[in-house]
Image (cartoon, rainbow, N blue to C red):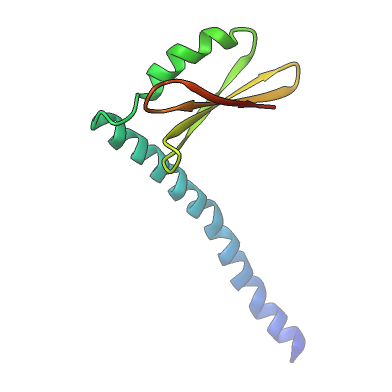
Length: 102
């Protein structure tokens, strides 16, 4: 009986794991969509405006992209230089740098 139960659990586990990336994508799309709506409403700056302010100060590092946090109303820009990743957190309303982390 145990081997049969194990065989039935394998497809169930596979289906559960297959749904995880989709859930993560939905969350990411939700944050991006929220940023788009907030920018269109004039509540926050657009990502391009933030990048135009921050990228020149990080010209010696490679820019990898950004993420938006709707709760904090902040963008997190990601850079890499000499194998070290640096995050620059920026207030989405003002464009002011609010933190850096390595």
